[in-house]
Length: 307
Image (cartoon, rainbow, N blue to C red; front, side, top):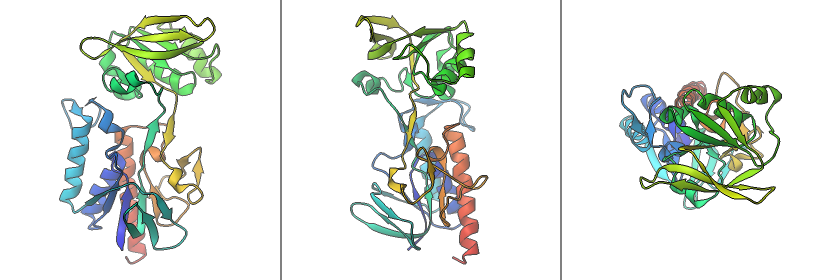
């Protein structure tokens, strides 16, 4: 029987582990087979407080993990395949074990939707990204592209004009899906250009294994051509990693609903933090902040329950 089980080992889960460990809750973190969250595929992180020089995403996760272990956090590797939150204590199952807990923090994160082409995977973190706020500053004075046609894509494109000399939005249709106000902002920005009716067949790289351009196909003419750029931002949405909790936790489009300003879900004793909740900011620091809140919420909850 565990006082607290944390599902997930990204910034939200590890910060929750640090805070709950310091509160002597002896948390158990069940990290997925792919541990560490999206930071594990990030190269240099410049905007996480406390580092005057850029830190590699995996190194930042390793530091958080070591800090959590220093305060008594235990880690077990495995994917949760089933949960039962309908009765207490809560039950969680992996392929090999069954766990029970008085409280749970869900910090399973979200996964960026991808183009599903080989070159995207190969060049991820080497000119290909899904977060303009995280990586935009690396592309000062460069020509970059954004893939997508919704609000997120246009928000990324407008933001990136602060750094890039030119931003090209590539969209598979001849009309945007974004809101009218976002379209107006994009169309009025002379740094933003458009490739309509187009899809990406390949992301091209140079001898340094960095992005040098795109192989683009026009869906109306079937013309295939190379388009030069030095950065590619994929902005076709995120998928919250929450399928496991469907039918037990209240959600909105897959994102877990919490009782703001707390991290309490609709089930007493179940809390949630990070990108599984947040579809607006999606930053390592905001995920960590929610992990902190979740740990404090759990500590208060267990105290009220005399556990």
